[in-house]
Every structure is written in structure tokens, then in C-alpha cells.
Image (cartoon, rainbow, N blue to C red):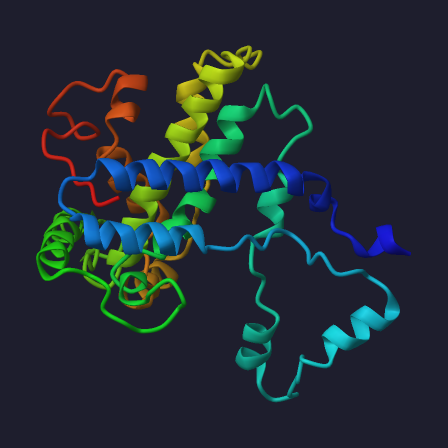
Length: 287
């Protein structure tokens, strides 16, 4: 009975927990190195990062009939409230992404960190984006920033805003709204940086995995390929237009383009010439 209620992803939960820990370490390392934030604000940021809790795949509580009944009491569904019902049942994590972790995790390390690792890093970074930065370690709306540090943070974010606002979508003949998509773009960039560094640190400890057969790609190239495949999508013109006008993240191709343009490691992996589209001289970095 228990196994029938458990998603297959539970068998990968220890791996994902390790990935989360590795990504948190890399975000902490990044905090140490940034030069636009002072010691007082950094101290608050370190505390907030340390208190981030893991909720991966399924609850630790048992799956007995009593446990399930007790948990279900909180789900107050209404027949005519589809959106509210959906929010109640909204998953804390994309189970599908967890299920994509293969058993041969060593060989596919680059794929796992490029895909699932980025999602983890993305969510960690949300705690410090334009919205998350307004809440303290306890989740309270409070200004925990020194004034100059906040100015520096906003200046770094403006680089991201300008970059994404320059992306023009030929399908809809619209530019990306760099302001409304700022938080997601900052999280994409930070998540990619953290996941790549965590992947490289693990590789330094365990050694370079064998290359996947049939592909003439290095492991670093596979890392960035796995990341890009996260956002592959195809939509109608009208759907895309609605997304451009209403969503808080840009279409997938611009999520890929923006974060990879800002990644020196991507340019090195794919030998992109300096000054080319994928390796601009000016790069943006917040976290």
C-alpha cells in the first residue's frame, strides 16, 4: 500500500537533498565574494540562507490512512473555484524533474546539475531577488539592507533589466518587459551560476565522468545543453503574445539567451568569440 502511494522520485530524494546542500554552499561562497555588499547586510543574508529549509518530493510523515485523512482535512475544495483549488494543490517542487534523475547519476552528473541543479539554484536565488530581498530570515517584510548595499543591488539588477528589455520577439513583434520579468531573470542567472559551480566542485572531487556515447559533446557542453532544454517550448502566436504581456518570466528562448550570454563558462565550453551574440563583452551579474 505504501509503495503505491509514493512517486518514483522518492528514491532520488537523498540525491536531491545533496544537490540542495551543494547549491546552498555555492550561494554562500558567492555571498563571500561579491564586493558590492557590506558586512552587515551579508551577515543578514547568511542567516537567511542558513534558515532555508528543504521540502523535496514528499513529506517525512507516514502514508497511513490516518495520516492521509489528517492531511486532507486542510484541502477545502470548492466546486466553482478552479483557480483556488489549483493553488491549494500546487506542488512545492516539480516531481517530473525529480523523476528525470537517472540511476546512473555519475555519468549524467552534468545533465542532472544542468537541469535539476539549476531549478534548485533558481529557487534559492528567489529569496534574494527584487521581491525576496524585501523579506528577512523569518519571512517578515522588513528592510534588512544597509542603504548603500540596496543601491548597489538595484544597480546590478538594472543591468539585467536593460539586457532583457533589449530582446525582441519576432513572432509577436514585442520586446521583453525587463522590469516585470526581473525577478525570474535574476533567479535564472544566479541559479545557473550556482549549479555550474556545484557541478564543477563535485567533478573535482570525484573526477571527470565518462562522456556519453554517441554524442560529440564534452560534459561542460552537456551541462549547458541540459539547462537550455528545460525551456524548450512551442506555442501559438496568440499564446506567446499573452505570455509576453502577462507572465513574470520571458519566453523560454530569452531565458536561455539571457543567462547564457552572462555566463563566461558557457562561452568557454562552446568557444564563443568575444563580442559575438552569445559572448557579449558586457555581462550582467547580481548573484
